[in-house]
Amino acid sequence: MTTRRRLLAPVLVLLTALLYVLAGAAPASAHTELVRSTPKDGAELGKAPAHLTLTFDEPVELSDVRVMTLDGDRLPVSRAPRGGGDTLRAALPEVAPKSGELALTWSVIDEEDGHASSGRLTFGIGSTAAPASAQDRGDEAAPAPSPSVRHGLVAARWAGYLSLALFIGGIAFVALLWPRGAGEPRARAMLTLAWAVGLLSTVMALGLQGAYAELGGIRDALSASVYANVLTTGPGLALAARGLLWVLAAVVLSALLQGGGRTARSPGWRVGALAVSLGLLRATGMTGHNSEGTEPTWGALADLVHLLGASLWIGGLAMLAVAVLPRRDPDELALVVPGYSKLAGASVAAIAVAGLVLAWQVVGSYDALLHTSYGQLLLVKTGVLALVLFAAWRSRQWVRTRLELAVLLRGEAATVRPFGYSVAAETGLVLVVLAVTSLLVTADPGR
Image (tube, rainbow, N blue to C red; front, side, top):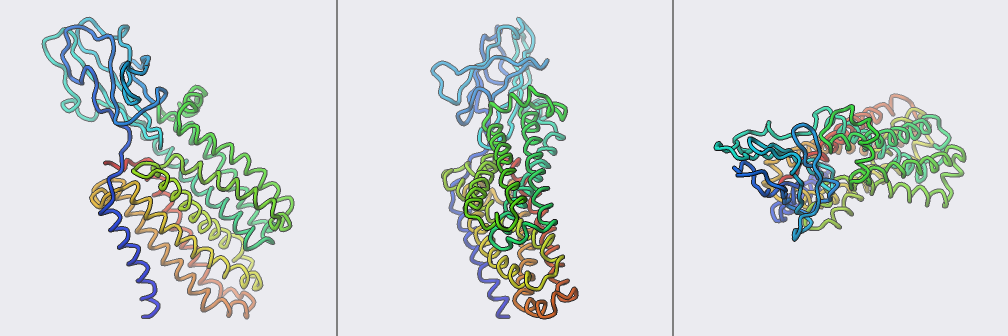
């Protein structure tokens, strides 16, 4: 009963804080959307207009906006005279018919998270019947990103999150808790694989983000022109920066693999590993929703802490399951497991606090938590995370009550096996949490 009360108290405190934050916070901003057009959608015009003016709900970059004909021709877009950063103008002289119907599509990429918003505008030119408005046409009239591209982007982000956690958490585990692990083949293989997947997923995400922004298909993700275009956007530059940091991470990993435990204890190497790790964490957070809301600085800081805590927890957990437990070395178990237990506890606390800040920053209200797809995904993530914490609690209980026995029995398999099962369950559930996190990045928080 005493143990249950100890567990229940912090859970109740966190839930109360979350409800308080969501009930009192200001609503977060959604993705970039079109506010109005001149001429407006569905207007009946006596003659073809020379220009189309588009006004969005926030400032946009010229490279992030596309206005196209139904034949796929892209129209030149410029800043509107006497307009702010949220108003653009597209030239129409060569595409507007003298009579009949003029239909155009528009798309805009949110500068913060790379989400694509799009729609269709139709005007009647010199005819007696007004064209159908967007409401009459239905949502199917508006262009939309390819489902295969969206799914590919989610998969690339999932692989990116997983590799980031395994690499940074694994490096930290070896440097802080288990320097001898730098010579363990399983640990070396895990770090190398995490690095390779991290770099590959970033390159794939760059092409998929370009195809997503241009409302193209999977084949467009392999086009050189798509890569060139996406590098002119904010999300593309953030992905490119992450790719360069993964290249620098190869230097850190190579030094560790060559120098082994001696390198892991070196202050110079640790400073370099810390700098590259923080860079990777920040570059990864630059393509999320953390900067949307009333306090973008706090959102960015909370996201950094959130990713760091998750990486230390997940990467250390994987290193424990893959490299430490199979050895069943009693001296290593006595040294490494208690140290990781403390590190995991601090990481979970950081994840919880940073998660509250991000919920306040992005979701913004209790109603949005319950009635938007983003809020519902966040609830699913929280529910799975609760199961992960339960598995982590079981692991911690084993450390407190059974670790000494396992050491005395020299790592006998029967005594270590329950701990291995608990760690395996925790690891599997963490993969589900990362999958939901990948979906959250592409979901619209709503207003």
